[in-house]
Image 1 (cartoon, rainbow, N blue to C red):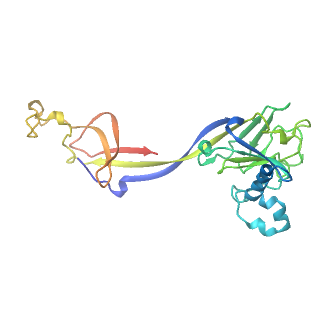
Image 2 (cartoon, rainbow, N blue to C red; image 1 turned 135 degrees about the vertical axis):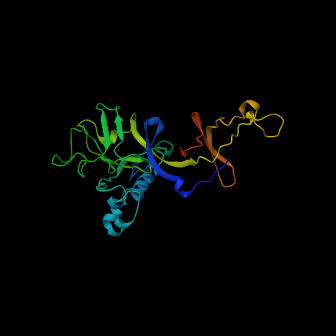
Image 3 (cartoon, helix red, strand yellow; image 1 turned 90 degrees about the vertical axis):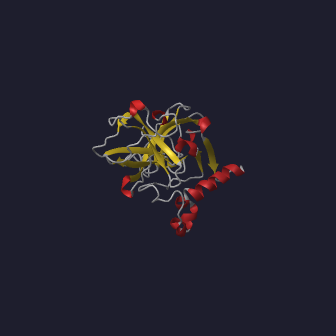
Length: 278
């Protein structure tokens, strides 16, 4: 038994879910960049960071302001103000997270880097605007401004490409420098984002509709389509146990199984709500 949906019977909407990840150094790819290095890989990583993330803060933009108008991953308006890109020196670190982990993007404000490999534990967080800062730092570049300000931030995170950088070269506490972070053992915690689509259907039936059963066990075995003798009473109830969803070619897309059979009313309309997420 089939019944067509009206447009008003269908609804589609999206929602985001977040899953927490904890990855150690063996599960991440870390690249040290050095602009003047004789190592071609180190210098190529520097050029990669400069062109893709820090073009507005590099010597190219300083010498030619036109480069500030070029849209790159690190554009100031990409993650909201204020994202700081003024700290781009000759050395730094780039760490890449697999998209299998962060899915669509890293949730803003969820990132925490912990490095226990040095004499002092370095913790670095993101400020939801693409800037990384050390909340427990003993030293700061400016004591008069916020620890996540353009003076005190230590790197950046680019949420939708799963990359974070450590660009500060100063000291964390007088004995440990930020350049030591991610050099050996460290842990990155964050929440990955996934967009899910929910489809909803209102499956309605009127008293005079869908009052026949598709359960073949109620019919006589003589093949005439007659109900068994003990089921021919006018009080024989019809129960709804499953609701199937079909496309225009009558191909089954999915079905919903009710937790218990529901008697089909012949006196009042009934509605069932079917929801599918994927």
